[in-house]
Amino acid sequence: MTLGLLVRDVVEDDHDSLHGLLASAFAREDEAALMRKLWSEHAVTIELAAETGGVIVGYCAFTPVSCKPDLDGLLLGLGPLAVAPEHQRQGVGAALVKKGLELCRKHNARLIAVLGDPDYYARFGFEPAAKRKMTWAGFDAGDAFRIIARADDDFGGVAPDDVRTIHYHPAFDMVS
Ligand SMILES: CC(C)(COP(=O)(O)OP(=O)(O)OC[C@H]1O[C@@H](n2cnc3c(N)ncnc32)[C@H](O)[C@@H]1OP(=O)(O)O)[C@@H](O)C(=O)NCCC(=O)NCCS
Image: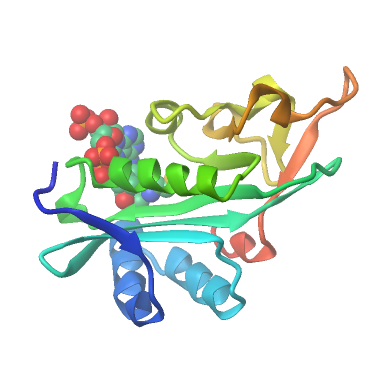
């Protein structure tokens, strides 16, 4: 665990540091450009920075998603999640996800989706979306597209042969 880790809300003054962090964690500019776009549109519901010694070393965002057929309530997607390379594997990512999920509960979020390493996200309770008859509107991500709900009946029901499709903000198309 990184000593003296503070997980806090993001303020506008953090954006330049976060741009650098995202570019360095992902080793490309796509996610930083995505966040610039989402910040400019105020299209982020929850975002957190992890800081140690006054330096931001981690970041996570939860943005609104929609689904078809529609479901009422607040539906969110987790991502991007990024930790500075030299601070990885020290629990920073886990601290961000746990605190983020806590805030999602406070916001009474109905569903939270994530696309990423299945083993990493399973530990926080994300289960395969396919198991709940949900799929990502992008490509078939299999087990990597996962979902967590406020309660079991929040997954909603669909006809036996149907699935619900989750759509992220169109800016996510910038990320390949
Ligand atoms: C993925 C990421 C956010 C994890 O953050 P972290 O602070 O390093 O992770 P934690 O310390 O909370 O958890 C560490 C555990 O997660 C797992 N883990 C870490 N990075 C992983 C990765 N890229 N893929 C799969 N598992 C990973 C390992 O099991 C590790 O445990 P170990 O050290 O005992 O092997 C971080 O590695 C990162 O920023 N990667 C680059 C950007 C990225 O891929 N983001 C995720 C997009 S979905």
